[in-house]
Image 1 (tube, rainbow, N blue to C red):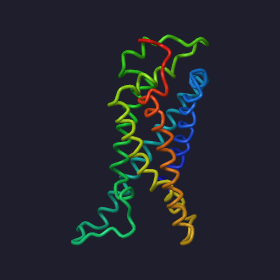
Image 2: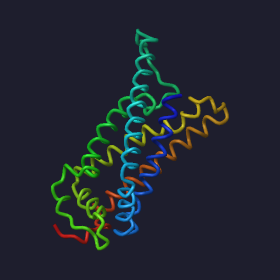
Image 3: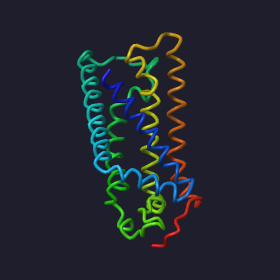
Length: 216
């Protein structure tokens, strides 16, 4: 239940974060204004970040504890192991989760704390005196390695969510034999829609569909 509840909280954050990021397609004023509104929250923003960090830590810790408990329940491995219902995503939830954590740390260092690209410090404020998040994202994703790592991270997140989003109701005991297949299908569709949404940004930057007005 703890894994399910923390997973729901993180899924809601992923949705909200995507809706904020997609504003880059509406222009610099939209995403720069959105970013400024977040910064205007001040201490509340850091309280939300701390809450999300604690949620991530608890989610990972309890998931690992469950994996260890499952391993101890069968100390001897199967001689002939065949996966009938378990998907690739469900069998590798812990591993994909840890890799996503590594990606999250880099992503925060890159765009939130702006420690991995010296060009970000050279960006001038936009006409409304807001930090130019629009140009920061453009210059950040123009790097093929950064965009590739981002897309890889989103793919792993998709695999993670394709199982997690369809199983949290089962963990809470809120499904049945008829509902379970529909939840599994809905979870996969939901996860891949998030993948398309998130990866559309670096792809658009690499294709030159989104360009910065600032020249560095």
